[in-house]
Length: 150
Image (cartoon, rainbow, N blue to C red; front, top):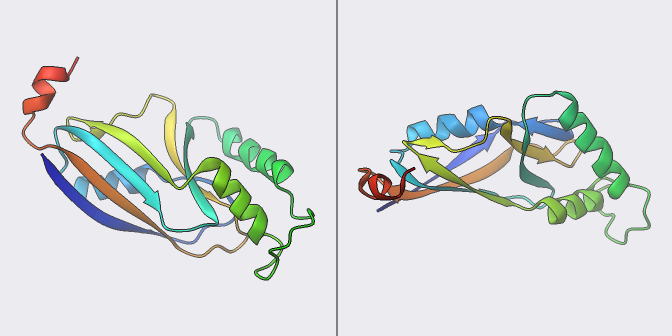
């Protein structure tokens, strides 16, 4: 069993749901991917989150953004307003979606379903670049995979 860790620096994006699966897959390729294991992703921010959702229809990220704007609108009487009107709603959205994901790895590749993709959920108008810590743990030689793989 081996542990590996690296930090991905994601470019700044506008508010919305952005598919980052290819970027995460490239980071995993740069690691010595285990035959079988787990990839844990952790975003180091309180106004952006991570999610797994449908990656095929481009309407999905737009609809998600629309729904979250209605769930946590900027015009609520928030007390925490010192960082602008989009900041506290961003914290609410991050609390709902979460800051981490765990994805199984098989034969060195992410075990995402056919229609699943990893999203950076940017909840600020100008959130800036984001950092995601990738922690990969698993069997490098396939010993466990031969037993549990089906």
